[in-house]
Image (cartoon, rainbow, N blue to C red; front, side, top):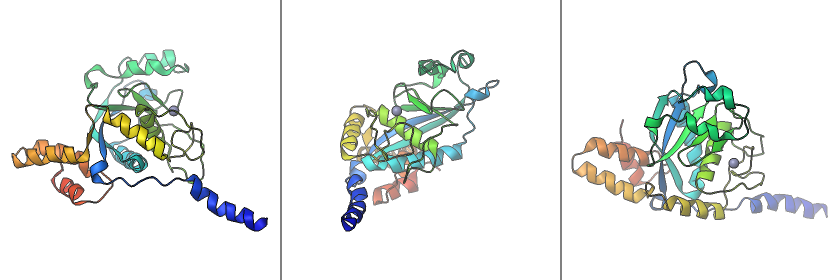
Length: 253
Ligand SMILES: [Zn+2]
């Protein structure tokens, strides 16, 4: 009996952590994402203290998580800007309905050609998905630690909201990315399939080989700057192939 229990203990964790297929360069979906660091004079709660360096670290972790589904988030741009309508913070910060956050987005940096994530200091949840153009994450995010979980809340919260943007509902499983409020980061193969299908439906999301062709064409035509911007989206892929090496050599410095 004891031996059996021991055997189960060895087998079960492995069985619970389903092996996902490995996605190569050809299968990667590249999703452009615009990062907004809201820095609002006179309203510290609407002022993130995250720096560009932090964002690179955060996106690196986000992409390790999403690499499980062969999905890669490439920073389209990083914008530091004050929140629009900062007075709304004092009026709404206790509200559990977080829709008011949308009014904080400055008009001139919105568009429909990428995902948008806004970082601010504080609001009444760790993060919220209000549309592909309106994800919010707070500096002060706190999560319940689970065994094998991510070592830092902000990349996990960011990855979780991106999961909603790719149609995932919550799934209350200890080490899952879509569980509420924990450091879990795993996806299963059904979630990988579902999010890849969702990615394919956006007209601004391409697979890596198509982007590479675009970049190579610009490069051949001597449009080095345009080429470099597209190469940059591929250069941050956490895989090492001849294609990603070429992208790294030719990306914007
Ligand atoms: Zn959620």
